Length: 343
Image (cartoon, rainbow, N blue to C red; front, side, top):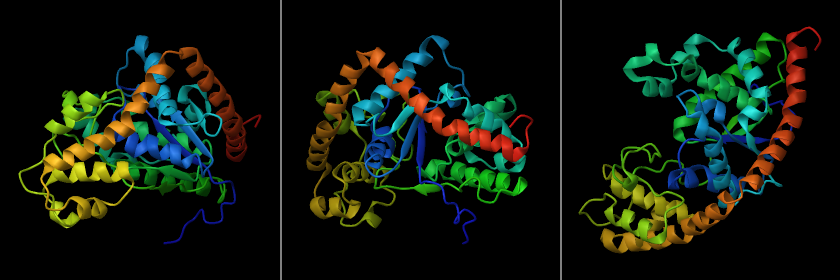
């Protein structure tokens, strides 16, 4: 398959964002934060707390800013270095909103109507859903391309949105006869742990909105809480198998094996080679030990970082200034390419 951005000669740049809604959990850590920390060692990274996306559903104005700080604290506690990577709040950089409107004029209704995430979130009440919820993927494209980002760390549930970002970039380039203006961002899949499932139901993604706290490991959970949750995690009476194929249909068991593999940075097969034939009692004990080693230091650091909101605000202010220094000239180029007056 040909890549229309193969001749794009700008710098490689990684972009990703996390919504400021609810406390972060193990799925967020293994699927995003842990990978972000690794990426800052090898890539030019821009990470964002996406508060504009958060308001596609009602938010309490009294808690939104505080939730933004809490998500920022989780980035920092997980090991993100704000001197090495840019960390900022989406609404602090106006390029996101301006480019989203411009992209609305390149995107097509049919593209957005095919987005499965809108169908899932709006359900049968789609006529009452906000335009923002429908248009969410266009803003996501603007988030990425305001920095001409070339790579985006994605999970399975975001691949369709990234494909739309590529379609929008390609359409803009074609509409304005600027074939190399925007790159077509590529998915960046780094290591296991992209999709961590609920501890209570292995068919559902681990979620901070799940009513049961037993469904997830929160980054603030202490050792005793982690042990209790893993002990109660759903598996089945069968022993651990010898191959990943034998985990098919055993969603709870497969999830715990995947979590172990992601924490230990090994393959599922490596985990099965070590524990095949054993019951889940022994395995859960070993998994708990791994989780306590990985998560409790983050929880302790979270407590420390959250106690200093002035430091968090300083990190976000500096990050917004650095992000704007990249995005503002790109938006100026966009205006010139479109032919706006005064550009």
